Length: 208
Length: 374
Image (cartoon, rainbow over all chains, first blue to last red; front, side, top):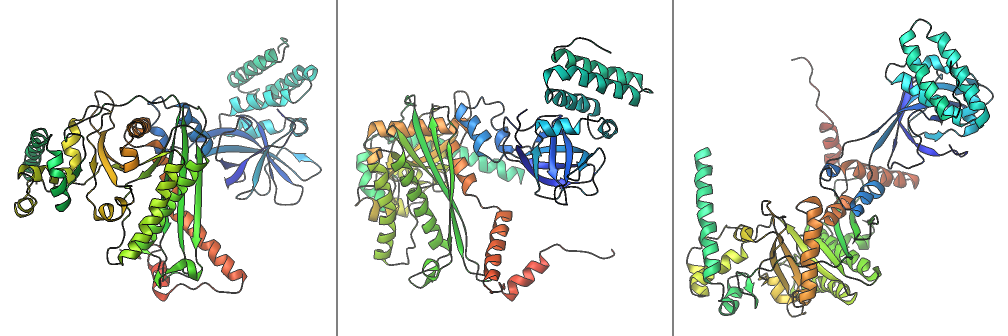
């Protein structure tokens, strides 16, 4: 993750629980599933934080022509770079900020149409994930693949930290999940397994 | 209705058979038919036998296809303000480069008095179509002039023959055609070739030529005696072309071609081309080229092969033309956005945009009907 605020696109539609943005072209730097993003709030210095939980490409009859035709490279590049391929990115709202504090709760108002959505930089991700209260908002979001989303967000949050802090961060996240999902051992086990994989990727093998 | 359609198909099949038989029978009579063909507006034969066909030529590893297409918003005298818009879309496709083609749209908004009227006539309908056609070919000439050295094919959709209003004076017609031909000349000077592509062509000029041949090339008899092939499109005759092959070259008998293009050394020639690949149903297109392309075998071969290569990307229509059309197209929401921008700019200077009463009430009645009760 780079330490720059990349613009992902502009808000198409929004509600308190989440919003969708549109962008013309899939850029390599556009945040992936589970990335932390931010939109400006209604008042100065306020912000709304979210997690990308879906990236979809709209159907295009012209592109359909080439699906089974093995098109030349020039056509592939034309379709990807020149044509206005409509891409929609769906975001689950997981917090907001008033300029001083970050809150893991739904904002008073959603972002409005054509607001810019930015990818959070590492500092913002570290600040937002200093606490784990947003877990509940993700775990209760039925419209999203919640467990996958939470695991992916923790991977980004770990990557935003120095290497020596990553395993400790993931261990703390696992403990929080154990508290939240104490009544649902099957779900907890699945999530912990995913976190364990992240820890292995982070170079540490100790498990819970 | 089913019986009627079956009978019609049977008649059509027998006419196609007759036309193909005549094509073989009179294949060598091109020279004899050349003069009378002009009198009956039939396809004018060239030196190639009528049943000649040329296989798909090889292509250079790298070549460029430049396509342009246009669309327009007609001026609306009931609208809040009188204006027109011509939008030219273009695509520069460099085969073999692996690069993204260069896509471009160039709009022109005409609203000033001198832009809206020509000789006191509002620039609308066919007059505006004429402006669009000239803008398309001008854009092509500009793009060809800026292309690096190498084989370049410029493509327009439809025809190279400018449709000029015959009720206008000959001098006026000549001026319009010369503006168009000047741009074709610029394309030639840039070293590029140019062609027009017509999908599913409906012209019957070769059919008319075959009927002329069947009455011994007698133009008076051809006019007098009913032509059984009158409504048979030429493309039906050429569906037997092998995949990728082109037909013989013919010269267009259109009066604008004979009156203006021919004396300028740019007589429009045409041929039919089977775009399909092996073991596919034939897809016949009509390709027009000016004389300076038709008379150069290497340029003609480049046009032939490049169009087949372009059409086979999509299956049956040149990719670059499809994209140029897409880039030129003005959608209804885009038109609405433009009209909002025009209205805003008028209000900024204190002018209230007011549509005519007719346009106003249409906007009310067409905005969606509601029904109360049953």
